[in-house]
Image (tube, rainbow, N blue to C red; front, side):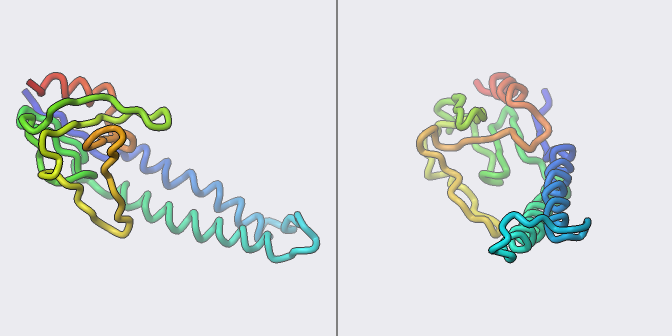
Length: 167
């Protein structure tokens, strides 16, 4: 029996890079690079270039850097095996099935999450990495919430693998 392994979706990573380019094109248009810049408020000449600059620098800079990082990241993001489950956005450690009390489905803003309820959640804290350190624990829906968005498997495929490997 083979382990279920999911990686970052290259297709979604490419779209995450290409989508902000529409905002960049709009920002360049607002700066006047495609002809006359629009004049929404004749009493305030600074607002259009300011919004355009934020659009170009902010969206292209931040989102594109994140998108390229996700596109080039070739590590496995989710592994489900007879030994347990490992979600790289949460932790590099494998959580054995003996520690998982229950697996449920959570839904936040019409997005489904795999929710793990652990016997001892303090043994598996979230690893904080990178510039954007944030709390990954969602106490309202369970101990560990795993999303399948951005990886190359569907929610249903991951849940099927959990049902197959979990005793």
